[in-house]
Image 1 (cartoon, rainbow, N blue to C red):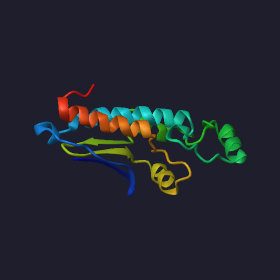
Image 2 (image 1 turned 60 degrees about the vertical axis):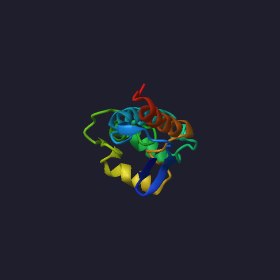
Image 3 (image 1 turned 90 degrees about the vertical axis):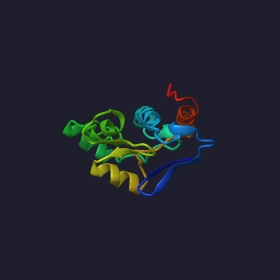
Image 4 (image 1 turned 60 degrees about the horizontal axis):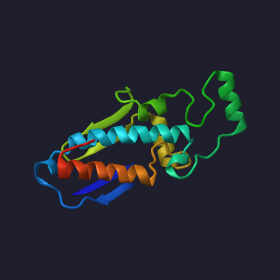
Length: 151
């Protein structure tokens, strides 16, 4: 079994999961639900740290952009103008969040156009995981397959 996570064709996680066990390997939805929660927590940290939580900070914004945001009453932090992007990646059930869990796969992301634009441009990727988040996702899936537990 493998855990593969891609965002617009770019591999985020590609790991082998060793020794799948019985029926739990055929329906990993409980583990994927937990991994979704882990991803949302990691995204909280990513937005709070302006990208540093994944190992590389986001490209700074221009002083003129900060001034524009201030005058317009928008959040001046990077990728925070309306908070819509942040909420779509950190709040379960947000109208713009994509979190689909099926038997053998999950999909996580955002329907917002700015998500795709920033993710593809790469200067300020709103979906990025540090190595610990990747390891935690793999461990969650392995634990579920081996024991049936997600906690």
